[in-house]
Length: 302
Image 1 (cartoon, one colour):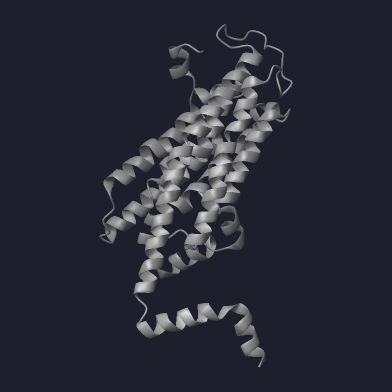
Image 2: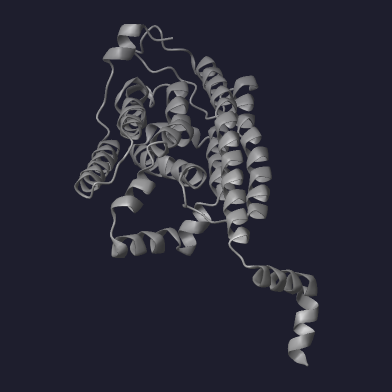
């Protein structure tokens, strides 16, 4: 493992990460300013989480040791990408940026935001099952020769810096943010089952990386002049497998808890909807349900 002084003194400049950090901070700050001008009370601790653990963790991963050594160390790259997908979105979404946007936007802005969130492509990508499967597909690439160009090619690095946190946000935001989705409780149950299976399956690439007796990405040569603490390629791969295995399993718990919270929230929303119905409306709804689709079609034909 690297000495502590190497960890704290290593840094690099990641331009895509810098652009994302500055843009996210500026938009959130603009939202806070608008909220203050409109006398909208916003919890200070959400702001602290967004700027501190949220954007702070993204900056440390991008500019710190993991960003500087992700080209040379499989385990540093694995730590960075896995945290991009699981840890950073959880911390950023805890700041409720989408809820803040809804609080400060006017009618036109809210309509545009809702139109964007309701677009077919966004709804498909933000489906918890689809986003989770994208994560599994990404980790499966770690078992192939594509792992080497992914961590060494600047184009790959820029693409992953943008796309992986976005995929994580699409997976986490529907669970955390209030009103981000209005799925029926039955659909959430189906999503929960698939996500539970997929989150468990996320650990499989890590297990295979750990137990493989050979270097899977084919990069077996040790770089000349490498630091003495740099592990050999096989040990590096084993450490990457350990990290992927641990992080994929560790994040399962909060995500599953959040799925339960989302289920409870949807159940309460549906209960309030039924409570607001009059006796006549509820009786008509029951009759419509008991008729069934076939009987209704036959009635229309007659």
